[in-house]
Image (cartoon, rainbow, N blue to C red; front, side, top):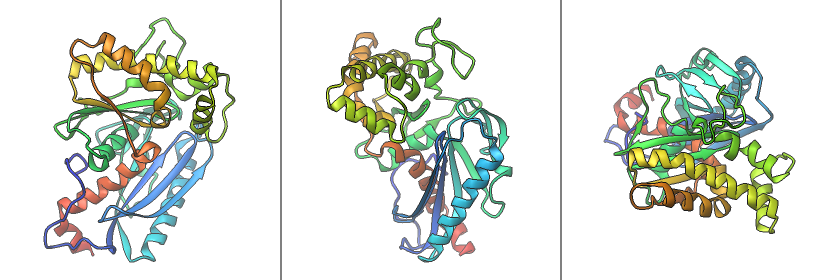
Length: 328
């Protein structure tokens, strides 16, 4: 299953690792994009499709219809290369029930109790999970030197986190563990889409940073912020310093409670790390009870959740090659 530690490795004799055969299909529902990819048993991305456009406030049905179209496109492309879909895993920015199909709440999409399993291809039953969880699994399986005990923090529009201990995801009773973006940094702060006030997303989320920096949203928002910061734009640098401080405050509680080996920044945070890290590290060093917790930057960046979703299917194949061999 997707929680097994380690990298993609050689399976038993029932299934040869080759450039043909089963492929993991990964999909991602983002606030402003949809993406799908196919990964072969060697861990190579063999097909990919992306659609840009806002999904905020759209009902799940048309969004999932478009996603299904991208899935069909990627599967068709993969099949021309001798691959066949072994399964579908879908990353979403929200709380996912333990049934692996129901999005209980996705504030940045305005989705509630959406059964995605009923809206996706019946011939390719999906596993749905939070994007931060898939991002953490990608880091565990594909990252260079990633520890087995770590906090993975990522951001696009919102901010999510995942806790990995002894190479396994810590999911919580209902599967909702890791909602760092809704940890209150300032209890009397601005209102949040979740219904709370002063949440981390209101200080370090993408919209908050753009607003504080005085930057108009564009297509490549992270690239724009990084370019402005690199050019010495003090408004952008100040906004990123303040976001780093807010991240440090929110992470302090998690680090003090869980004592991980380290923290890994992924998603959009990875591209902005040079300007976030100094204040984030200062805050952690000042507030944590033990030695300063190391903070590393993921090399996977925004691709982490999509890759983690696809690789979770690949790992399921490698864990039970006999079942796949029977299907082939």
